[in-house]
Image (tube, rainbow, N blue to C red; front, side, top):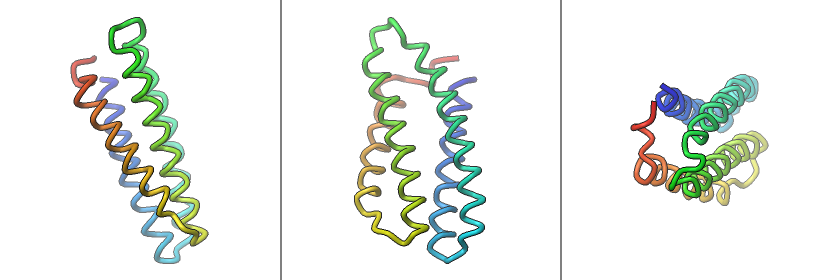
Length: 121
């Protein structure tokens, strides 16, 4: 159940993030601000569900990898937030996009490949 909540929250976050970037690029600052606030609420859901999943790995053989995945997930949230803010101000976002891609790849490899989150309740 927690795994499904976490994955659903991430999918929703990615959709909302894309919407914020598109709204910022099209000059609709008010709409982007509203969607960005909803995205920030979704970040809280991600952090809660991710923390719950992380607790399953404490004292286990994969604890280090789970902590690294959690840090990569937080890095991804931070990169998404910085891109959202900087695209609204029309500042350069290239370095944040690169960081987002790296964090996303690390999170996917660890979450679905190494840790096997689908096996948890």
